[in-house]
Length: 315
Image 1 (cartoon, one colour):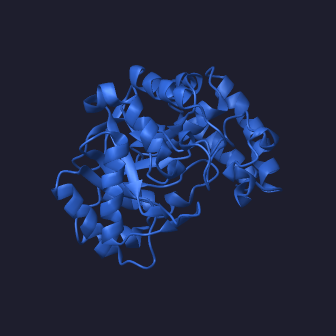
Image 2: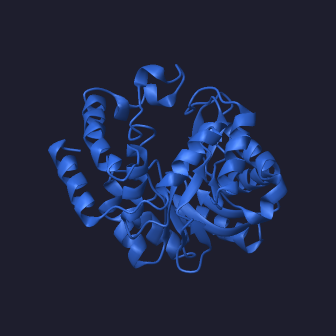
Image 3: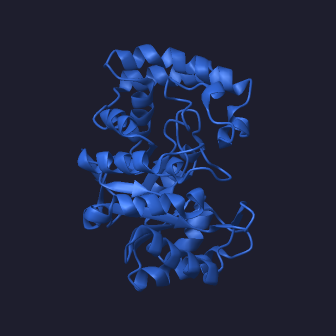
């Protein structure tokens, strides 16, 4: 599988990474029940078929995702790149709260290392800004963790340019993890150009917009406790509009014997700022389908055709 360098001096990551959000199981932002054995089989299938990195977070299932990842990669830990995140913690009642205080970050990295069954994290990321803690303060803690060898690289998720600039004055930011898809393109305005110019790696999450761009999405079939049921992005009339847009994408993908999901991933990877797309999976079959997008390169004409549809549907 094709690889790209993460930032200025980072490792070579495959252009598709395994997203471990959904395998965390039920929690505040869960995707319904999961089978841990199936999750582990999916992770191993990803590794065996060329994907060389996994993205998880301490908050996914409040530690469960990391535990599953740790068990799945135990036999090949030194051959897989693991990225995880800190900064969102359980308040004791099942609600994730921001906490980027030094003591909390310190506690989180130790807990993540235990769950992942490892002595170090390849990429340690701040999950979300904490309005109560200066960016410079939390980033300095991250820098210390890297200096101590508990993280090889450090990055941020959902930060804007001003936050990255503040962090950069303390220590270089290796990577940014933004949400990015055909129907959620805010990152194009400032974040992606800034990262490209400053050689900051970008690992985009939700390239298929949490299932909306797969060509198979049906809100009626997702679990009752699935976070998408309460998220306004999946509400009407936007939901129907996006699904009609997806139907118009199908013929474009079909010309290359691909699915709309493949097209959605390929569209994200077309942006020169993107290092890799994080693609979630809960089963081996999903992994094997997702990897077919890795070598799918959209032509300029196809990109124009897609842009015309984006404009037509006012997305």
